[in-house]
Amino acid sequence: MKFYSSLEPDFARRFDRLVNARREADGDVAGQVTSILDSVKTRGDKALVEYTQRFDDYPLVEDADWSIDAETCAEAYAELEPDLRDALDLAARRIRAYHEEQLPENRDYTDEAGVRLGAIWRAVDAAGLYVPGGRAAYPSSLLMNAIPAKVAGVGRVAVVTPTPHGKTNPLVLAAAHIAGVDEIWRVGGAHAIAALAYGTGRIAPVDVITGPGNAYVAEAKRQLFGVVGIDMVAGPSEILVIADGKNDPDWIAADLLSQAEHDPTSQSILITDDAGFAALVEDRIDVQLSQLATGKTARESWEAHGAIIVVNDLVEEAPALANRLAAEHLELAVDDPEAMLPHIRHAGSVFLGRMTPEALGDYVAGPNHVLPTGRRARFSSGLSVLDFMKRTSFISLDDASFARIAPAAARLAHAEGLPAHAKSVELRIK
Image (cartoon, rainbow, N blue to C red):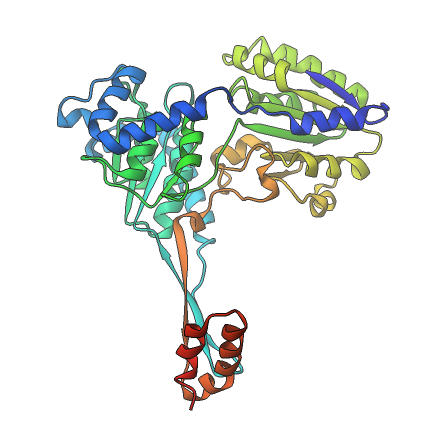
């Protein structure tokens, strides 16, 4: 863990280094992914068979080996413990309700020139959702990706998920049942992203791919953007907590570790104006790490990428530092979070007040937990129904409205050296 004080003479230089530190995987990931994508594009299902055997030790031999049917998902849902089933249902209801409020409205109006203008929103035909397996088999992620797609009106929602050694997560299957997923394929990794983008003999191509994954999945989405739409290129999880000394240090320690336990490359940062409180939080983190089942991963993350920043004035200094970091998750655990919120320009999602831990947003609050990482909150947003929709504008003129605006179009076409454009207009001018 790195300690910073804004009173230190070299604080600006050290903070710049923290802001610009890379935690995404480097090396030859890009080259390996390019090779995998090319193989799937040219060899289709044969490539999927080879990669799934190599990476997941799972043979795709018979038809039944390739996918998981709706009946299996329904059985998984029915067999859940009642309390867990109720929790999943609650999460799904809240996620669906929030995203229904995001649905955009079509526009259709006539302007002062008499020109009819408007736009129609339509869902994409098919969406592919990546659901991680292994370390990160999360039913919450399936709900957060599939429900917005269904709310948007996507006709075909196809899930790809690795099943190492053939093992499936019953909670993920139950979530698929709740969300109404249409297909589930037992493939993962970069080759699954390629299958969704290009299509294979068994898997039909999609229009948009969303969902979190490891460095290979993220790189595959980056390389395939343009062939298909993507939600974002997501990196390791991160949380920034702005907290005064009035907080319970155990609470703040747990909030920081809630992201550290995701992955050794995750990042947790605390900004406070109370050095004594900072020391207490650091001590409680050590205690909690020794008690967490995910302690090994969380400790690697905290020791390699964690940071505590002590500032002189929380209200004056913290928002500017937060905007530089542009974190995926930002907690404002202060007396008046509403007063600080207008000064936060860059964050994936903001959690207001001491009783709003980020973990609630991961499950049952409602807003999407698929959020921009790696400072991408400066220019992008979390997943929404709009990621599964596109807008088509329309224009309609009659003789009168044409006469009002057409001469200007012809003049501009001539000015740009495009005489055919001009003639297309001028031939209609009476």
